[in-house]
Image 1 (cartoon, one colour):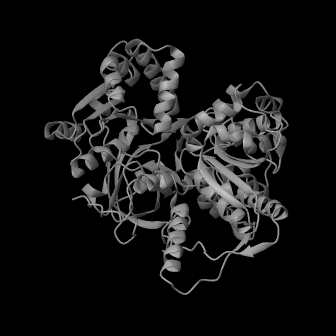
Image 2 (tube, rainbow, N blue to C red; image 1 turned 180 degrees about the horizontal axis):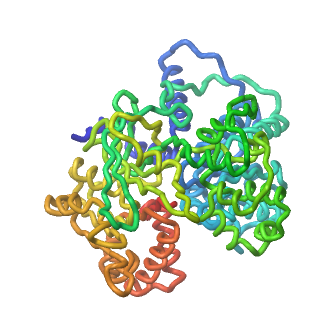
Image 3 (cartoon, rainbow, N blue to C red; image 1 turned 120 degrees about the horizontal axis):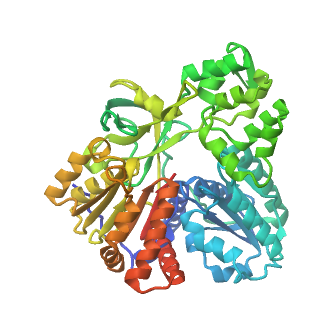
Length: 594
């Protein structure tokens, strides 16, 4: 049963303003806002004043713009706001999708926190912002001082490419670099923490002597006790293989209990899982390098046996460019050096995508000390899985759809870190988890809107939660799912559930594409083109479109949507692309890709 919202005691029109104000804000920003409102109410009630917060008498205004696909850039931007507000600046925080581009020419202080996706792409929420800055309509910015903090993953060749391009472009437009660009890897704090310290120091130099304000932003409630750095040990309820023998991929349905954690989630959110590396893989690394796993290694104030560092603290199944570069120094091999040179991005991309650390060490022999190895490897980070359930349906549980990564590398078995961990769990075991919000992958607030869901393979996971949630809330909009897999007989994930949902009326249309069941391969983008007229009619009628799955698939789907708009909407290719960009900006076209 869904909760009924209480009437808001606000004048006409103010509820819409409140929705616009809070749209896209993360947890920390919402706590801050609620505390600020509470302080205003306390002052009106004549309550005892709290100690005032220093605010500069004529503090310069600084704008922080963020572009975020998974939430990391948003959270980092919120930290920027806290630090620079503390320094005395007047700071406003804006999602790139909501930034008024006409104001760029009048900005004097600007910080951009932005992630890079896939092969050097901007996050969906910042496409218009990035295109404007990089495009011919960008204004001269001679009065602007700026700083860029890029977020990325150095296991991709185009590491932090969007942040780098914006940083260079701002300078080319005449702006003055106020802060040196930061390029943060998956261990965001290693770069972000000192960058924030530098930003705070630079801000203090701009701020005149503070005066005292009468209203203090306070936190009205305590922050959640379970989060990324304090995960919950979730008991395993079930782990079941849902692909048949002989399937291309071994996919598991995992059910975890969240009872007692206080964790809640919405459809579209992800569950973060803290993994541990396979012990057999760690032993092979130690044997290849001839290192003692019991040797004590100190790093950043912590001392652990080398084996413990490699099991639980360091990334060993995903290569990154810095690790390859440091290993190249130890091998002296021209082939490895050449792969890191300009113009070899594709070769490097193949290496990073298909090679684990141990295979690099075996193929290109080099000497490592235990201390140097721990220092070179990136910290192990949690893996995010789209939640495949709705709490309205499963209560204190979270369900996942996990492809178990396991393959042969020259006669040796290799595994994915988190997927291998989850696949090997039994009922009663525990997994360390937390909820990762995904505010840009939400069901429409208007339950009468139609929903189009495109999710091949494990990309179908969030749509299981969508369909459950829409059924539980009595949504009147139609639900159309397009699913793809290699074979109908072995790879049709949740087939029985979809058929039952269709019979109940919870799913109104189901189209499938099984790529290898016929001579010509058929993918979801082919089904989109086949039903292009109806797809276009749904979207023109106000439907929301969701895509979840691999980056390459999402690009093929996007290209198919452009063709559909040209063929069935009578648009030019340029207008069709602009139409899709508008849907992205409006939040009616959302992608969760990896």
